[in-house]
Amino acid sequence: MKKNTIKLTRKIQVNVDLPKGEERQAAIKKLYQYQNRCYRAANMIVSHLYVQEMLSDFFYLTDGIRAKLADHKKTENGILNRSRKNTTYRVVVDAFKGEVPTDILACLNQNLSNSFHHYKDEYWRGQRSVPNFRNDMPFPFSMDVFKDFVYDAYNERFSFKLFHIPFYTYLGSDYTDKSQLLYRVLHGKLKLCSSHLQLKNGKNFWLAVFEMEKENHPLKPAKVAEASLSLAHPIVVKVGNSKLHIGNKEEFLHRRLAIQAAAQRAKSAVTYTKSGKGRKRKLKAMNRFREKELRYVRSRLHLYSRQLIDFCVQHQAGTLMLMNQESKIKLAKEEEFVLRNWSYYDLITKIKYKAQKAGIELIVG
Image (cartoon, rainbow, N blue to C red; front, side, top):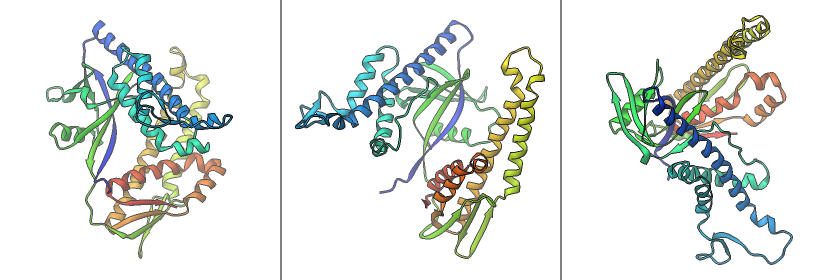
């Protein structure tokens, strides 16, 4: 049975709500310690999971060995002294006991176990490598440690406690749905699920996960919308006799190339840029154009994917087919210019997310 809910993730900047001083520095130091232990634990977990999954292949030199990854007390030929999921949990708990809350380790173990078993066939065939985690990876936490979520009307911000450390949100000029989602959580109209916290470049980010019901549209599963991604138009979609061209080459590609040219001019002028604060100051103009390009592309892709899904909903198409994508992706890999500038993968990802939210079945051919 299909689920009627979907999970959305929003990146929200948060700050430690403590006055500057030793107490604040101690809280921030503790968070960085949690993140460091989490990334080390994540690498340990996936290493153990991989060894366990490939254990049967390690016995190819010996005949007659029968082994099963299960508790030997409950299963014949079992070789573990506890349940399989508990093995990796105990490994990281024993390694980092007292250095990081067990809530983080439990969530991390659950997430990585689910992810690993989802891709285990690809690991076994050698089509995917075991992930390697960096020291700035976000660390997970459950709602059991998320406390005192309130809205501060005086300062116009949301606040909460995490591991007994107070935080407040910084939304700035929010033109997205973040504040609306948080309001709905506050009034019990939306569920907040296990989320993540990331510390990066001196800032703290709350990767909040919201569970909400899918949009209810009168769709017809038998009615199919055929869409294709091309160079002439980012998206061309057809439902019956109705056809729509979404975006065009001049609008998307010309603007992106103009930003890239500006970034290249800024790069050429780096040598003559005023120094005084090192590398960061010299590269400031160039990095500004790179961020501008990313924001422009992200905005366009969101707009194109939104128009595609709205067109399907308008014509009650319950199935969306992306036609001949494998050949186009192959072409994009061969042509460096196309791969660099057309953002096939990002566009498909955004289409998948919006189709799932609207209750439309997506088929990529």
